[in-house]
Image (cartoon, rainbow, N blue to C red; front, side, top):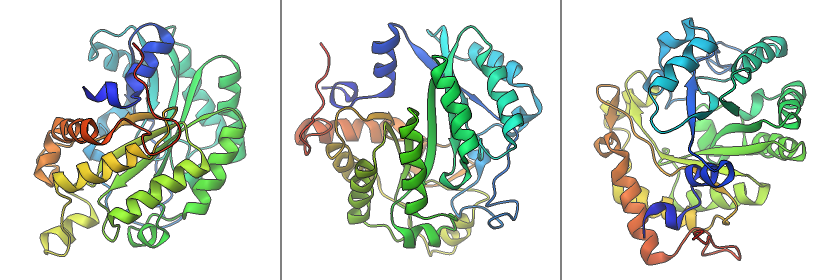
Length: 308
């Protein structure tokens, strides 16, 4: 079976609920990050080089212009989710956020928002604002970068928050009816396979509506790049990533949607591992593993059943 028959993927979830293909359009809101501007720290997380996934030139364009440009790059979709992706997309005054979010939502083909942020940058006023859009009928996803539930690893990578912070804001957001998507990185220095399993178990225990998995990318411009060049940091192998990712998926109940099970980056930004240039390698490997081990949620009481 193919991956979408084994895992509850975001694409098929949207197709099922909307009756047509819905695509995410990535936006750059010109936001900063408290772990870069000195509020919490300097230099950001040790893995971070946002240019590896965000177009820095886009922040000079209006939200409306960015949406129009991104829509021309998408095939077979007429409805979209506006995805504020780069840096910390709740890190501004609420009135500024309100203006940007509503500029995106005023487009007739936008069905909702995905807002990428950190657990320590989501005050109640922001949650209330997002809940207001939810009440208006828009689809709202609060995408929280947890990365790992291991507090020691979070300190090591200079993350600036702990698991308790994530737990608190997730419970608060979901109590308001907001969808939460949890971002996790597999292969962080110091994390073991046992940590990967512990992380998914703790995330499921807290409660989440979606998960994004991706392997650690060692990218140019990051602190980790220096350690990798000095031979002090090893990149995760494809086999190890597939093993951990498939085990995490097996422990995830069917109702939790996987927005992503892998990711890719391009050279020269990507330094290691080389296999991350092609995200299909991991996706194919995960599908192959799950065909042997079982579908998403097989180790829970709520396994995934592909809708016929």
